[in-house]
Image (cartoon, rainbow, N blue to C red; front, side):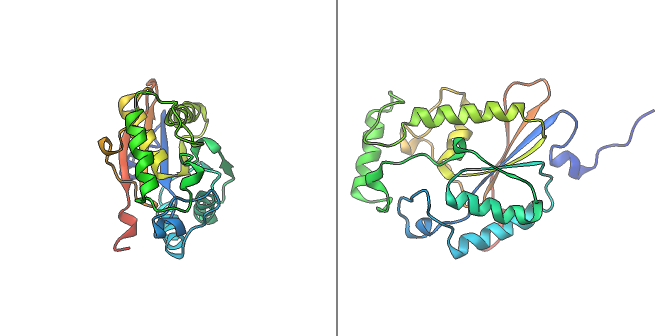
Length: 228
């Protein structure tokens, strides 16, 4: 006897038996995002960023979530806390999802400043060495390695619907790893991987039972922001 069919909602959100779904969201806009400067670990959300996070909270009222992870950086923690006012889950803090660690000398300086341009130019010149360092920043190869580690760890989580609050460049690295493999480096040449990660945009990866690799379902869905 044929059982009842799954509803379109259940099918869309990937909660069929044997399907693991990873919802990745960028934090709300921060004060440093508004100023277009390199930000510190303790940079908070701006007023507009908190508004974005509350809109995202409403979006996740309609999306099943069983477990919540967040970067340890303040802007990600604040975003996770706002979403979690409705979800009421434990927030699992993980440094694996922290933003790419920039050179200390760039913090609080303009993203389009001369020193930032010098840094990006040097990255291009050394793009064949993933563990090269300009100053005291995190090498791109180390960022990639922790992304790969996190994706592997998520395969072993018992819950099927996982929400992660993280950061722009971290998301781009995850996209690269999922699409092109664990050896890829998307922004060794900054202009060659031009994808946008909007504040509070939602990216979805899924892992089907019996498969070893995550699959991209949605990139940077920010329809919930409307005209903001």
